Image (cartoon, rainbow over all chains, first blue to last red; front, top):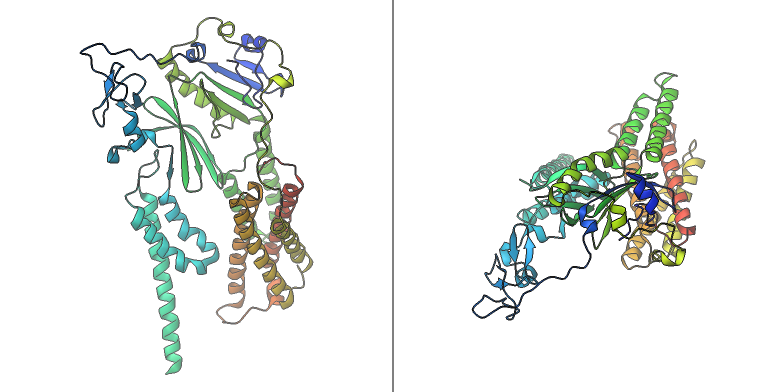
Amino acid sequence: MPVPCARCDTPLLRQELAAGDTAACPMCGASNQVRVFPALLAPAGVPVLTEAALDGEAACYDHPSKRAVAACHQCGRFVCQLCSVESGSEIWCPSCVAAGAGKARSANLDASRTLYDSAALILPLITLLLYPFTILAAPASLVLTAMKWNRPLSLVRRNRWRFVAAVLISLTEICLWTLGIVYLLSGRFRELR
Amino acid sequence: MSDYRKLPGRRRGFLKGASVWLGPDHLLSVKSLRFREEYKRFHLRDIQAIVVARGARFLFSTPDALIVVLWLAVYFAARGRAPWVSPVLWAAAAGLAGSWLYVSIAHGCTCRIHTAVSRDPLPSIYRTWTAHKFLDQVEPLISQVQGVVEGNWVDSVVVPSHPLPPLLRDPAPTPVPGRSHTLASDLFVASLFADAALNLLTLFSTTRTSQWVWYGLAVAEVAGAIFIFLEHRRGILRAGLQKLAIAALITLGAVFYLKQILAGVAMGNRPIMPDPAVLAALPSFRVLREVDAGVCLVLGLIGAALIVMPRQDSV
């Protein structure tokens, strides 16, 4: 497998790679710093070895003719080499991976997450640009926080300070609106009297 | 407590962000898009190579924007207090812009991580010093899992010894779907130019009529932006104009808000509509309109460039 330039994807030349750590791209001229690891030298496309199960040996749940190599960490079904899915330090069967295994759904399998805490925080803040909209955005942020408080957060940051800040800012905005409305109404009442 | 440890490099854009984290046995590349994070894992045992290419990268991040806002705040506060303030501030602005250009040109880089089945960019690593720190931390971890390459590895892999002819290389990237402009986007860009022109022409003589025209243009900009969002969502329009519309709406909101504050300060507590002529005489109001006109002009020019540009998404 050739090593391409990180900028233009043109394969880097043998003589450039052999010369040292950096290789100039023949197309765009960019200087590429290349770090290579043994996985590059491993033969590509090694097939997964699944051995046939002999009499008396445990067999894969989905492939009864194949020897089981592990049990699913979630449901306990036996899995062959082909069916075993690594999830962190655990082995799962394809069915549990597909189903998410209910509550046991692993964070390691998530490919994306929605950041409700960021949405709840930005809502009352961004509407300050056009402040009349805060009368709608502040309660909306409170509702969003209440509904999504227990939903999983980002994989890499695990605290809920954004939700807390959203609640504080929204409550402040609602208090200010209430005070403003009460002030205006009391002024009208004084005028009427 | 998170299972992940942050690795050097973070990209903080207005809409997009990126970072790389170290997990128990893998690297986690995180790409954030507004309120959504997308994850991609690279197991340490699968990483074949990391390539860092030097080259100019012009990225305007949120810390850069914060510096611009701080400069504007200082400019508004200090303008006119002493004759030397304005030249000093403009010199500082030129210095900051020059530094940003120098760093972008001389210390920009692109980093890609290679596995047997993928060649993914790491957007969070776009400065050479970050790339060095990242490699210093990641290389020993991968070597711990895989070992190190010994001898002349170049002979063990298929590497061309001369540039490949164009036909043998990967095909050209497929063009980005969507049109470069629609009637709504044309009107939106035209309203930006009109806004800039109106601000510049009525800088010293604002009337109620010109103010109502400005309100009309603001409504046109908001309506144009909404149509652009809808057309982009339906796949009719490309992403660049949508980002331009977001930037224009933020500018519009900020200017509207600042105008209200300045009008409030000028008129005190009197609950009447401020006289435009009085407002126009305020130095701070004039500066705000200068900045508004400049920003609208720049956004209009970017919009015009996006409209006439061939089918490539660059913003």
